[in-house]
Structure formats: C-alpha cells, structure tokens
Image (cartoon, rainbow, N blue to C red; front, side, top):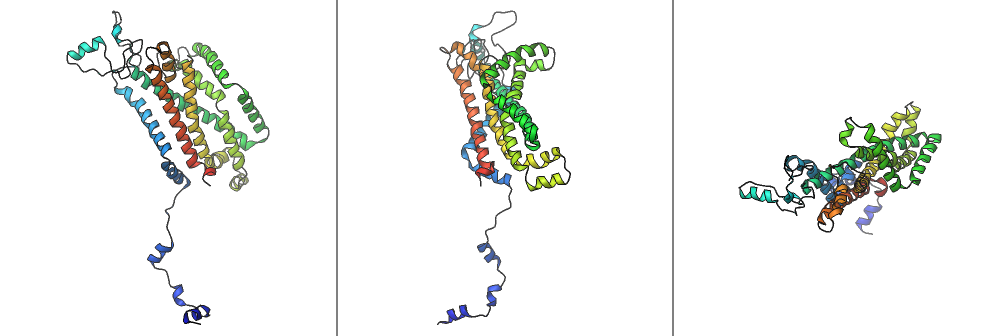
Amino acid sequence: MDKENLKRLSAQVNVDDFLPASEKDKEYMVKMRPSTTAFKDGLRRLRKNKVAMVSFFIIVIITISAIVIPMFWPYKYETMLGMTPGKPMDASFKNLPPFAYSTTELRRIEAGEKIIPHIFGTDASGRDYFIRVVYGTRISLAVGFFASLIVLLIGLTIGAIAGYMGGVVDMISMRIVDIIYSLPDMLMIILLAASLKMTLEKSLEGTIFAKIGTNIISLFIIFALLYWVSMARLVRGQILSLREQEYVLAAQTAGAKSGWVIRKHLLPNCISVIVISTALQIPNAIFTESYLSFLGLGVNAPMPSLGSLASDALNGINSYPYRLVIPAVVISLIVLSLNLFGDGLRDAFDPKLNG
C-alpha cells in the first residue's frame, strides 16, 4: 500500500484541511449574487421580453405624441379651415389628399409664407385630419385608462370584501357577478349607452360635466355597471387563498380590524395579479369605446375619437379609403401593444408562471 493510501486510512487529522480559506478560494467556491426582490426579478424578466418592451415603447410614444403634438400643431381638431365669418366656405379646403394644399394655401406659399402640410389631408368639413387622429387617440387612451381605473376600484373593493368576509356576503356578491355574466354584453352596452345618453342630457345640462359630454360619462357608467365582474372574481380568488395564511391569522388574533388586514396583508400580496389584470383591461376599454363611437354612442361631436373617425370615414369609403384605414390601424396598434405588454407583465410577475 503506497503512502497516499496510508494517509487516507490514518486516523490523524490533517491540520492543513482546516486552514481559513483565502479570498481567492472564496471567489472560486462561492458565486456571489447581489441581493434582489421579487419586483426586481420581475423587471429583469420583463426587460428580457423583447416583444413586451417594444410594445411598451410603442405605447409610450403614442401617448406622448397624443399629449404633446396638439400643443404646438397650428390646426385645431374642430376648426374648419376654409370657413371665414361673413364669407362662404372655401371649397378647396375640403377633402384634400395627404400632404396637399388648398388653393388659398398655395397662394400664401407663393407669397413666401410657410405652411405646414396636411399630413393626412382634410375631411369633408375642411378640418385637418392628422390632428383629429391625434386628438382622437388622446380621447381613446384617456377613456381606456380612466375606465380601467373605475373597474379596478369597484372590482377590487367588492372582490376583497367578498373573499375576506365569506358566508352570505360572498354568496350574494358572486350571485350578482353570475347575473351580470349571463347578460349579453354587446346588447346591454348598446341599450345602456342609448338610454343613459337621453337621461344625462337633461340632468347634466348647465353643470361642469356637460363640458365633458354625456356620452363619455355614460361610457364610464357602463364600465362601472358591467366591467368590474372579472376583476372582482379574480381578486376574490386571490383573497380566498391568502386569508388562511399564518400572518393573517396572527393579525386577526392580535385584534386587527378586517379593513386593516385587507389593506396591509392581503392586497399587497396579490398586487402583481391586480396590476396584470388592469393592464389587460385597458385595451378592452379602448375597444369598447371605439365601437360605441363607431355606432354613434361615443364621444360628442365635434370631439373626435378613433371610433367616430372610422364611422365618419364610411361615407367616403370609395373615394377616400385612407380615412378609414388610418384610425383602424391606430386602434389595432394600441390594442395589440397593450395586450402584448399585458402578457409580458403576466409572464414576468405572475409567481405561478415563475415557479
């Protein structure tokens, strides 16, 4: 037997094996990882999702453009460019093709004046179509975000109370949800929009809400009545799975009130699911506003939205098809980007998908 095997079989302790490891040995044996949180891990996964990040930047660019461009653009969405008080309307401003000028503008250009072209042309009333598309995008985005906020507040409140209280409260809440789910969505939305429009015109006359428009307010009421059920059911399911956890039972034993337990313990632990659901609700709200405006139940004229622009374009679809294509492409781009970004948020922050 050689010396190496004798050392292995020896009962004597090798002191060299217990010497402190050097810094070089530590770096070799231990791969240090910086401290992180679940939110940081989610952001890191989200940044790696190229489709979601591209969609996010598209949403940001469209939103910033819709806010900033009307501030310096020389044309207004409601201004009929060929209309002069006391004179007949200049027909050369009507139905201009993209990047074209009217006869009056051509004379001003010849005189040395700089005129910004009509990028998307003008409509049948002589209004610049580009600024109307931009302003319509702003209206559609604003309606989508505010409607989603209303859905979030109502669904979050009802779902959290039903899930935490249980019993009769939960049963009554879920039966109401089942009834709303059983209603035909499209028919109820159209009926409510038409009936609320007539009711609100009289009750809001002379108030500050009349400037916003009865149709937009009726849209918000429709979302408050019908669209909160998905959020409520989702939040209820999360609360039911969390309310039996040890930290919740400890808070209840310590005498914490129900509202405090919901705010401090339950809702923060399901915030990722709430954010993801809200992000996916925004494109649904925009799409609902667009087709209601397309049917004439959306925003009040002359204020444009993407749906109302597409509806107005039907009158000249054979001669000016681009007027229908442009708002349709913008709607599709916004809804697609929001859906893809919402899917990216779900993939990044949903703990069930990330082990």
